[in-house]
Length: 340
Length: 216
Image 1: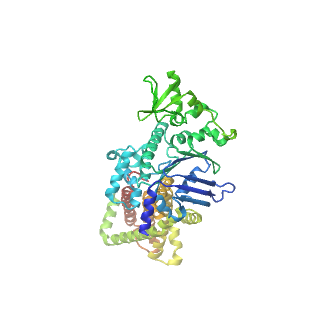
Image 2: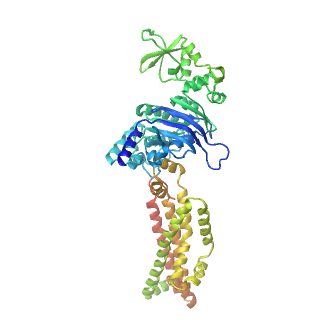
């Protein structure tokens, strides 16, 4: 039993594969329409998947099915091939980070105690927990010496959310679930935290499922976006494909398909650029930009400079270029009906 | 002022009787409060879970609250006769409403986001109750204990009507004998007892308010 649990814990600590197989969720007395309606999709290990759609589309319900805050009415959800129903819910949740919009920090616990909750539940010893708490507070930009002993009421909304993220990843879960984590924050704090979550994901490599109704946020963070409406997944694809090849009129509207500049502000330069041949010389006077960047500000620079192209660098090394044809190629959407 | 002086003399001269009455008063009050807490705090917990049970419990409690204290004591006479028994039962019942209502309110008042996070982090239902709900509701529950204690100490004065003793005896005898010193002895001591209890429990309330949160 103990050995089995041990093996299970270890398994859930590396990035997990999450599979939905014809999953539906019907709430009692909700007559007509299920909140989640026959969803089948696979989230690959280490993938950052964003669930997006208008309120009531079922995205949060779908998320909460993963850590069994809700149980599916029909269909099977499995994690690394094991059906969720075979795992006791509290045990399962200890291996899945969970961040919610309002933070949900325990107000009577200090910052350190909040971060230490899951390690405590898993029986870590004190020294290991304390070291982990400090490590995580540093990771989310809250110097432990200064913040460890504070209470949530003494923190700003953004700081509380950072603690919430540190708490969620404290026991190094292989899965991180985030339910509109930045919805209640101001724009500046939100964009800073978005960047940090992206970096955190690159460092830790866990599977992330992230719910939002903000397409900008989705395009920035996602490896793949699942667009939902009325309980169904309309399109499940990379941000670029969702933006350039929206599956239907609803998705097209969501990504602003009739507004080229808006769309260009969603597409990253990395997806739009032409790769540079290693042998190709780069002129000393050519304008340069550094990744990560969206196409829209890059286009500004291109037009401003009057040059035929801008050189794209990653980590200081030229990797590609962006010219007007490249921008044009990502400007024109191909809605499914014209056969793209 | 003369009357106060005479009352003081009366207390000193009847020290043994006063002490006994004070002890009976305290024993009745503390007994009723203790039994009341054992019965009504769990009832408040049940009620906070919601559903049909809540409506039933809250309804009964609200009804008890409407009945005047003296009537509660007298109405129990047919079942428990005279003496300390009807008094203890009545005082226990009178402690009920604030205990049930505050326990229920305190537990329900815990931020749902905190509870959802607790569940999502993998706390079991009992861990969630002991580590999150109860500590956060405790100040409100203790405020209920404080109200109940004051209610019980005041109402214990009426226990004298069914022959249960306590500080109320000075008041009932004082009225019968038209002795103002006796009347005042009872009134002053009950007042001091209530004030002292209030002071102590207010301190307890502050002490158990979890850090990082504001007192109820």
